[in-house]
Amino acid sequence: MTLIVEKYGGTSVGTVDRIHAIADRIARSKNAGNDMVVVVSAMAGETDRLTGMARAIGSRPEASPEGKDSQEPISAEFNARELDVLLATGEQVTISLLVLALQSRGVYAKSYTGSQVPIQTDAVYGKARILEINPANVRSDLEAGRVVVIAGFQGIDADGNITTLGRGGSDITAVAMAASLQADECRIYTDVDGVYTADPRIVSTARRLERITMEEMLELSSLGAKVLQTRSVGFAGKYHVPLRVLSSFIDGPGTLITYEVGDMEQPLIAGIAYNGDEAKLTIRGVPDQPGVASR
Image 1 (cartoon, rainbow, N blue to C red):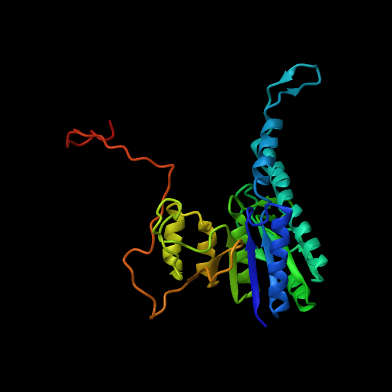
Image 2 (tube, one colour):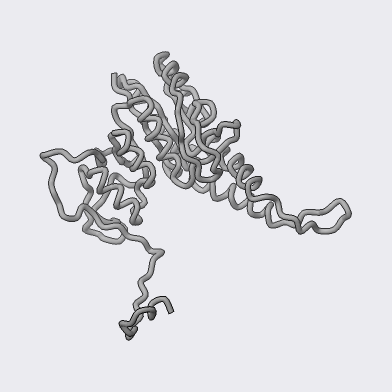
């Protein structure tokens, strides 16, 4: 029996209709005989909405017991801890809705938060790193025939505090779960049908790659390609997790991200990354003398 870990991003679960569509896809895969672990993000825009509310609350002056505005700030550690508690709720909404959708289709499913798995992290709020995963509870449910739905982006530290893994953290959760369960494949579903030679929204002639090496994908991600979170690619490479990028909106083979094998093509350039937030500034006429550059 094949064990597949699937991850669905915010646009893939952005509405109730999209969650129903994802539930249909998972049910088909489960009925085909696969063991299924599903990692989901918060619904599209939810993390930004929660962050906006936190900023609105934080910008309001605190009233002191004497009735005067207090200028004493809350510690940064306290703010970061509470922000993680807040942001982790977005994924919890999605896992519950998806499990309800699966159950309505006769699929036996169960949801897990990061702390219920448990996914053990360090205590760096907002960008925690995974230290250990104990998959015993998840394995038990898989053996019982359940589809396991896990909240991405979150974990728990040694003191029992909720932590989050940073933007794109659901990718890391999915890859880490695939590594700990020794899954046959980790599938990352997004709003694009694979990895392209360039951004198809900018380059009309860009083509989808059937496969790409871990090293090439890591470099593309680090240089601005937003298909996969950079840390997740590094994690997959370290623990030998085969990754596949697919679209949750259309069916297709996607792009397989794997280690280089002998029959793969050897292109000098696999793809071109684009980052619109960078600019190049050239200063002309600088004398070629020691100390000029620093001045």
